[in-house]
Length: 238
Length: 228
Image 1 (cartoon, chains in turn purple, yellow):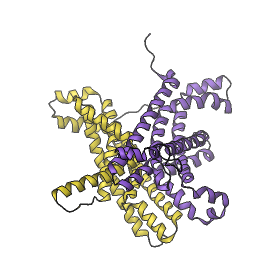
Image 2 (tube, chains in turn green, brown; image 1 turned 60 degrees about the vertical axis):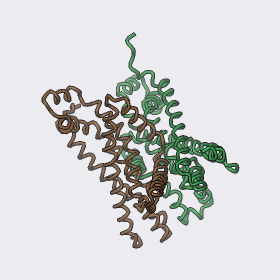
Image 3 (cartoon, helix red, strand yellow; image 1 turned 90 degrees about the horizontal axis):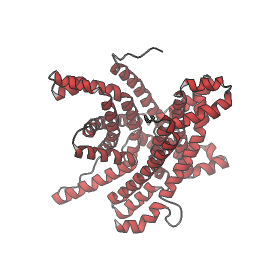
Image 4 (cartoon, chains in turn orange, yellow; image 1 turned 135 degrees about the vertical axis):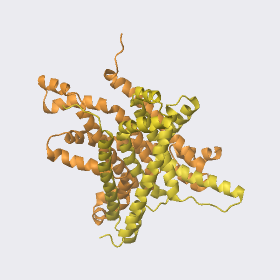
């Protein structure tokens, strides 16, 4: 165990000497796909709750497909599938983008989390007490301002507990990245397993690292909930 | 249309569905046991089930799968070596069912625990007062209501378990993903065949959505909902 830590500890955390590996890559994957996914999910969730069929139908279809298929299959589509299309190999930009396993993984993760986040935010928008929206209308809010200053802030706060779950699930989902040759925590663990045949140590170490990150994320979200969901907590008698 | 790979993909799809059903049955049972342990009086049972749910839900399923698959094989090897038998190789299907069942058992535990808290305790006491045995109380009073409250969670867990079976192809199970990848390798139509895998999963999720809707209607029999 100590030998493994001495030899591979650094690779597990941030670098194998040539490139970033391990926790650094996993966290980078997590952050970038969450940010992209969230940015896309925000306008999509508004479209999802719209009355207009032309708006909600495409978004519904998108979330249905991405929530109805395994992330691994989505990753395979982007990683091994797309590159076999001649269109992709002929266009320079697409060729460059899809040649990197990292890009494909980020694309799959971002689109996947975007689908779940869209549905979650749409649920949070629907759960806003209608009185709040009526009050806003009575005060003369409409259209963009209504969304910007009433609906979105309220929905984001309400969605926070569910979003913390999604973030943890995304952390777990990043472990698929090794199938696209991205050197994340699990890839290092597999390398260690291949080099030392100590499967239990290698994967156990990876599990412990993921567990620690999960706990840290949960703690961060607890603090966030304490700050932003204060108004929804039951009031004490005094 | 499938370049002659139709029957292989169909076989793979059957393996996927078998895998998912068996895993979910195992995790369902583990969930019931876990929930019973969590809401029991015994401190050690509570501690053990607490560790189980926290550890499992904090670690990615893929990592656990590799850990259990390789770990189990090594443990088994050392056992067979000391006893003197020849090596027994763990079948990916069995390993997949055990691992996925074990992992999602933790999620089912939480689902059932939440549902158990929602069943009015007076009804269980009434069962005792009427001379029901513990099994009868469970079978006729607790379980039907437990199902009612747990159904949304069960539906969710089933969908997640179904999709988690795709990961088992990584440890070598010839499920629908593996079959389509082999077809892709054979014909070099990777894109097309991976889309086929996605469509198979979409069909599965759509069908299970319909079944779950029917189940929900069945288990909410006798519940009145206010008309708005």
